[in-house]
Image 1 (cartoon, rainbow, N blue to C red):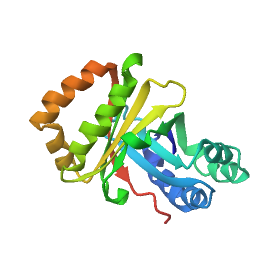
Image 2: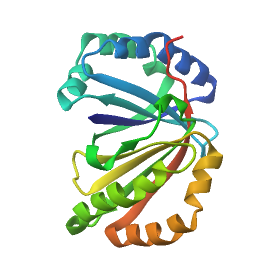
Image 3: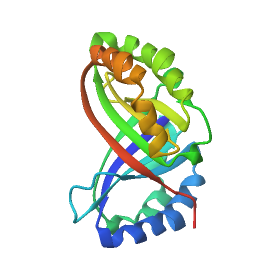
Length: 212
């Protein structure tokens, strides 16, 4: 699966209209596209600039062919006109989900909060990193109350860079897991051994994407 992640900013006075235009125009058309696997809009918890509101948008596709077909589809340009005037800036990257290291425990619609962590893994430890996520980290998460999903997304332009996309039912359940002694101790120490550096971790509220 291909996940397209866009970071975008909207003026505060345009947020409600932006959300409405997505629900009324963009999301229904996306749902009709071959290979489309879902869309999630996230509102960043940290908003350092009061003149704009930061969002992250995941669009997921069955494969790269489907993702690229949408980018050049006539209807893409047709519906984009509804939001382009409302978006102050946008940057994007594409990732491929590492299926064997990713886990979805329950209905994704139950997610209310999300974390996206960007990690640069040591080039000679990539398989160790993926194995540890698959066999230790994500099984421990899957047992935690409120856990929804944890996806390992590999940057398609850098095989050692990953986005870890987690979703939880609430802040309380997410924080409870991350403050477990097992996570703060063994897991944190082991991950530090495997990565060059943690590049960023951002927290978000999950927003509804259903058509109005």
